[in-house]
Length: 624
Image (cartoon, rainbow, N blue to C red):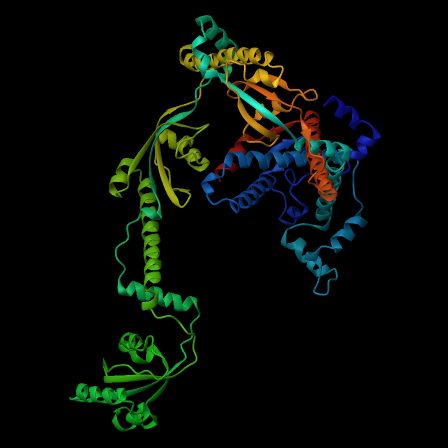
């Protein structure tokens, strides 16, 4: 920090301040086209402030971005979201003030030129439109001077960011060295000394525990916990009764609408009425089956005036048949051009139909789609029942019913979680959305049932009880935790001592087999190997061996202690990266270094400007 502060006082340091913030810390220039600033403040930053409306808009925007990437909205941690957005807005405000203090500005001519290039202000021919510019200002309640001021401010920040993030130095020589490190490999022999194997040798005294407690008392706190009773409902748990024919037909009609089906079947009819209509109709059907012409029989046998024209009645229209529409449609279903129906009993008598032309969409029959339509009908019914049940449970929760009563009334299994934690929660309900609602101050105080919390593809309702807030542990309460921690530390020390003794006795490859412990042969491994833990990977390539020799290393690791024997480190002669890929790698490294420089600079600005957060407004914004 001191080196950075000294550098910023120099002329190159001042030039370095001429750039823009990263997208993580700043809203882009399009944010200025979203509305004016709310006077209610969420934070005071030096002589400037972060507006409540600005803050809420940024939270909503960032939330939408994250939810677009999540399958389960309950995984979104609202507290972290609010903290990150607030920090970003404060960072922006700090840089805005510093840019002003350094006299950074952009001329009106430059702003005019840039605004004329914005698509939002251009007409159909691509020319700047004063009318569109005026409408833009009017819709947002802004003046031209206000827009220019905000545009000028954003451009100054853009310059500030580019100068900080874009000027980090990382030479290609260093990039090549970094790539070479990733290409290193060596043969490894390994033995782990697990600390658990040495814990019986550990002797802890009361004085050891008390000393640790007194030194680390403030860090020894109990976790905030509750006992949680909950019910969970998902569509998959809903039992659906058998599907009726009406429900199946409804799905088929929906399928036809979805496929934008246009019924263009041309049909003809023969109507037989009177006392002996059934017998006459059967005789006509028999003659049709023998191959006689439908049009000819319609002219001689039909009792309807359409018989004179061969029985043609035009396109099929269910509304023409009134209450008979369904039986007629079922009879026509699946028929091709030239096919005839059996005699159908309708309110007019007995009717026989044939299809003379079909220019409509060809659709599979209901029967051929029965399995698919049945599944869709069941899912539709399941979702409908699920939605009704969610509404009913929410109403019961709002009316003050206990979780036990709700579970019994709605026939849903009641489940319980004892010692449900606010932090480091690894239970089956570890989603941030559930934790937030379960530990809500009013929910805990009233021991109320939460409203439905969407989790994955289901919903959870929870009722907390027996709340235990975070507090500093007493010596007696902390003793088991301290004992376990000290036992592990001391057992690891014993394991490390053993590891160092073994490593000291290994000078040649032959010495490996002469040890009292057995070594695992890992053969040729590189820095990316998954066979070693993180600490072991660091140790494995920390020291080069002599030509044709080996090196034995011992160190404390995640498991306790590890001895690693390695031969000479080898580097591949040819890098698998092209010159273009190396250049891209260097760019990524420089960007990362630039972000580090930016964070260092923001820490420096926090020493210059006082930052005060309006906790009341912040809490109110989080509850919205």
